[in-house]
Image 1 (spheres, helix red, strand yellow):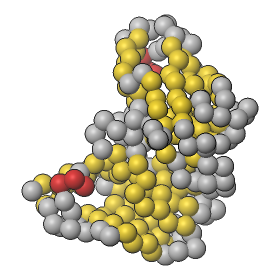
Image 2 (spheres, each protein chain N blue to C red; image 1 turned 90 degrees about the horizontal axis):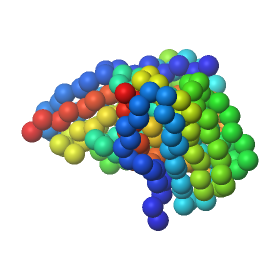
Image 3 (cartoon, rainbow over the protein chains, first blue to last red; image 1 turned 90 degrees about the vertical axis):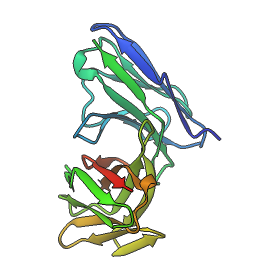
Image 4 (cartoon, one colour; image 1 turned 180 degrees about the vertical axis):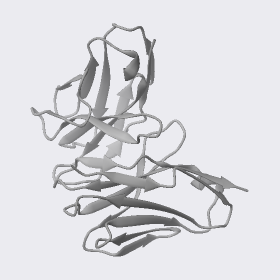
Length: 112
Length: 112
């Protein structure tokens, strides 16, 4: 039972490049989330998916898109990376109507 | 929306002493308050949580207290050990299914 798996673990991009961060969970959870973590700012919600087939914006959605590919997978896409998107990105999941969130190990992204 | 403030931002304690982290929230409708521990290079992990109908909860060396009137809640770690060194995040939730507002985090350092 791997829990929440994120790939890649590290990535360096040049400004303007695009990439997709992958997230998969094997706990049969309905809800999935993408956060970014910046020093002194805690975790901020980018997008979330309450259930398969639905996605909604969080606190800081600009510059990102998401896809809930199926119940297991929730991807985050940066279409044109900017230095301000340098951060650590975490994916999380939770059961429907349950509040306990389980986090992946994170993706450390640098945009030069 | 909900706003969560967390203090202190850093906390250095001697091994064996107690550590206390405090959080305040703004939305009186918040009804669930989890605490997450994040070790270096890893994702946050839930360590303890409390719901609004409970004033205190304890799990071995950690405890959480909630004062709904004052809108603040605290994490208490007793008999601290070096493995308690980590970043701790508080969070508050108002939605029924899981959209959190996190505090900025507290870096706890336990010195032998």
